[in-house]
Length: 222
Image 1: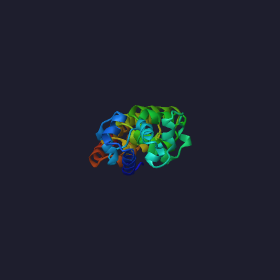
Image 2: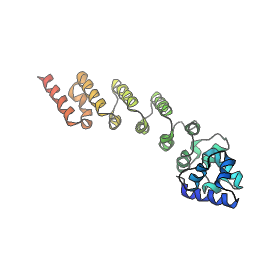
Image 3: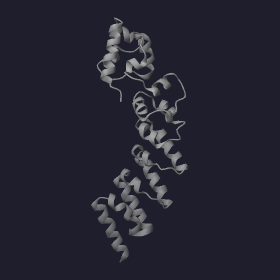
Image 4: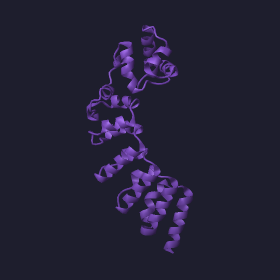
């Protein structure tokens, strides 16, 4: 992750070396001086589109500003076709803080959604994209485990229903289901397969719901 405090100090030093005020730098970048002030205090980072402008104004490189080389940023800024398979996890994770979701999606295009890459960038992707990747995984018979922490409840419940209908394991979904959904699925499965089929839900149900289900099972047996 970028050290915003150190980057802010470098921006301040470069600005002062050019004998410029924060207002003058802000004017050249067509932004507010408050934005420049926040950069220099380490409260925020320049947008990726501003890094080449800052480098040109100061007569330095982008590496000089951020403190090291990040190949992902360089490729995105230079409009090269990025391929996440060519980058380190550290570079991808770091760059993701400055990239737009669409730019991250471009990086993913040639990776076949490798789990290593996905686990790094998922927090920065749009909900729509994550659902599209999930659907693609299911279509191709791939595990969706790495995606579950980032999916909405409704989507996870949809996946559980599909898995249940196909007699597939639903264990990996359980920690991500709402309590109300677990109860609903447990009782639905019980109606069709009895308590043995519904038992997979028991470790994730609250005591009251378990007692209700067991009472129903007892009544059914009688």
